Length: 326
Ligand code: NAD
Ligand code: LMR
Image (cartoon, rainbow, N blue to C red; front, side, top):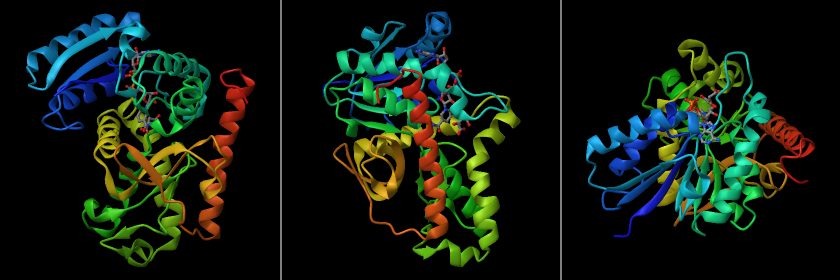
């Protein structure tokens, strides 16, 4: 089988370190698919990255056909079939993810350009670096020859957080809970508990505590990333890597059940065309189909409007600072 080329940016960082070994083991692309890892880092992190590459070699993974590691965009993105855009600065305690826009936005211009110039035409790109929805919009806008449908921003971690909060409350297993995230990967995200189910039954009925669902539950999911930073002194890494791998696995292998991912919006749920907006999606042959017919009540609509307004304001900042054309 021809090896696939998979780019991971920020490969020497926390999330990169959690992703690489699992990718090389075949978790995303399957047990028969050889893989070449193409790792991008800043020049100053090359020493650390070299150590990670040594460790990859020492695993002698049967599927790992080669490792390229570089600070050069052309070398990293050359012929890439899949890209995990992780490399960027994480927030510190007290910051919102959108505070990172000014610091991180230009990274996604450069990498969008590199994807456009050097990657395979069918490259699938998952943006993890924050603020991931807006960075994804920037990368996709810069990579103007690549269809927008091939770009995704990660909200799977928020979905898993929501499912596990609900499971804990109901004292059931999280695998049987479904809960979709709408909007931005930020403190305005909306975990749609109104349509959330446990084994097909509505969670609102099972929990039977509207104040908790509309209050503490939503806030816990929205603030989970900040809580982890407070506790660990560093942002989530193992859980973030896990969610990134799961998202790409669903994109590659398909999914008959809806999952949360931010995709190029085209007016669904009122999200302005061009924003990267999280909504329920199905996946088949690397193509995602948004489920666009869920009917939301007034409370849910209000939440969705708030998160859309935030994405719009991030887009306005990006345009006013010249990171993207209007
Ligand atoms: P980290 O600081 O541990 O690692 C980031 C790495 O990226 C560093 O090694 C750095 O040298 C590298 N880097 C910086 N600029 C780069 C560039 N231009 N090209 C290549 N590499 C570059 O951070 P981390 O904990 O791995 O987090 C990475 C990003 O992921 C952050 O923006 C963080 O906020 C985000 N994140 C997103 C989610 C999500 O759910 N979407 C979850 C967790 C973290
Ligand atoms: C998370 O949700 O854990 C990440 O986006 C990191 C952060 O800044 O909260």
